Length: 425
Image (cartoon, rainbow, N blue to C red):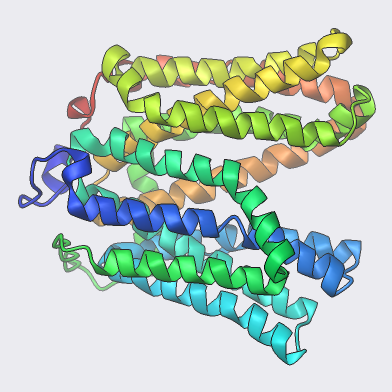
């Protein structure tokens, strides 16, 4: 069956994306919320370290709670997202996020703020964020036509990249001005803006189909996983991502030690490198759709993954070209992050087009869960290799291994994709 039959309602008007009122509302809510969401990741550690005098172990636990929710609840969240309309869920999660954030300044004002409160708020924010992210990804194809998905995803990614470039600096100013607990109030307000934006959307969302059998959470999870196994595009994306992420995360597990110990560069270098990468994503995200129109989605995906994998070779090269080490690391970050933005915009567009509406939440959740599992495995492998063969050898293994991840794309139907009209589920 063609995915187009479940892509967008028949009432979706064929208008330019910028003239699509409901997409504009979604985009505005996203953009405002993304800027606000740069505040809390900066403010939480500041509160823990300076206000609550947290220990190193407490700081590590606080940071780990940013990732735990997706691993624990994503598969179950995908089932719920496919059982109900996505827009009400997005509104509810925005409101819940705002309510959770407001707890921090209220507790600070009352003198009751403890590190355990930060743990709880961070964890439940992560849980709510998983539900929002899956609902949002499943909802977008309801608002725009299939051929507009790359441009729509590109606009949303550009907003995210802009927020990551500008947001941390703005967060620092707000924290300095308002203090960290009360700067978080700004983030809470941006979630309210996002909720109102979603509330104003008028596009009628399809009613979730009535299941032929009584709902069963494990069976529904299995259905989402089976779609990935059975669909040649989705299966290829998972395999190519796994091949890249095993080696990429192994490399990045020792990356900071490589910079500071092996290359002897100061820690501030890491900030320079990451900032350059954020700028590259900001530049590349808007051009993803035009490049795909010119060269075809398939080959754009393949070349992007070649660049992502090959960029790691520059990181390894820094060891034998020490005078140019910083330049090589910055160049690697720029080309990898820039290509990565293009790759994920197009990959997500293909996934949205190839997945029936009734399964988009579960497919997104399965992809998230598999990706996190592989990333965790790669990180553990990198730590073990770093102990056994050394940091430099681990960097070299990660760089060389990741270079060949594009092979999965070349020998798959992805290579023959020119536009989303070629996608079949």
